[in-house]
Length: 226
Image (cartoon, rainbow, N blue to C red; front, side):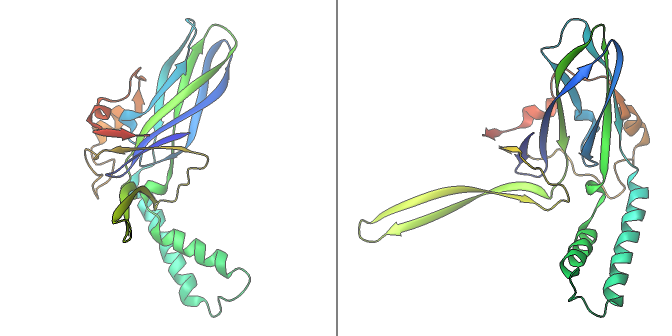
């Protein structure tokens, strides 16, 4: 997995995996996708695809934000009840309980799981490598530069070191992930009304034909640091 983190929040996720294709229509579900991903940017491409293999459909599945927020609020209320009713949190499960309550307290719609399904047509049996890409719109994941300057009084010289601080305050962990960094501002932030505020646009994004290139939004990336 590769994650290009944006300075303004969110980023571009690239995932690759090998799949076995049989003759006919093959359906593959890509899971472990945060609901904060932009369905208009979701693409699935076949690496070095044979002539008789093609992606015919990409179906996006995201939970309704208003409904999920109700469940999240109930979880937070339950966590508060545990704290209020607890008389002793010094037992062997103390750390586990506190971690669960803290995670629930900060949980939001962007932490809910979503998925999308790729339908691949083939005339032969073959193993292929597919590449999945999508934008994540989450301001809790971002990076910022940090500079450390040290001065040597004897030589009267200064040494400057530059660092990149990456912040991930979401519930998602990106293990064994190759990181890239870009100066990039999201075009917009999701409103409080939710991703499904415009039902017509949402339905249009739920069933899309995959593109061979990434979204034109990527052209707005000012600078890429690898």
